[in-house]
Image (cartoon, rainbow, N blue to C red; front, side, top):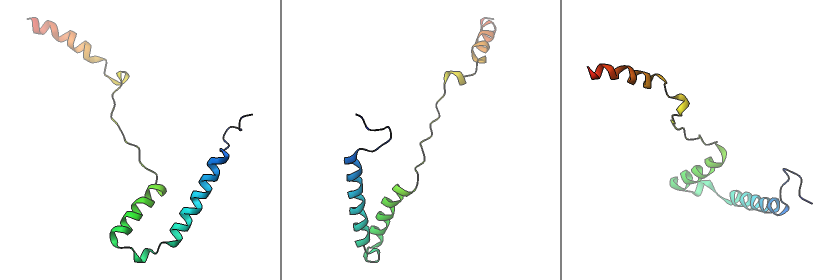
Length: 84
């Protein structure tokens, strides 16, 4: 019988719990005052990745639906002028 939808795998939840305990112990054992400026900046950089949401990359894609229709009409109208 499969797990209910949205429930976590037992092993996954146990691993996450143990990792969280390990991380908590590691953070508690750090003495930030003993770190030099570079180490503090690196620690801040790593911590911010998990606390602040990242902005998604914006792209400027042009779809065919967004293209103006008048271009073909303008070309057809200018051809007789070019033939004169």
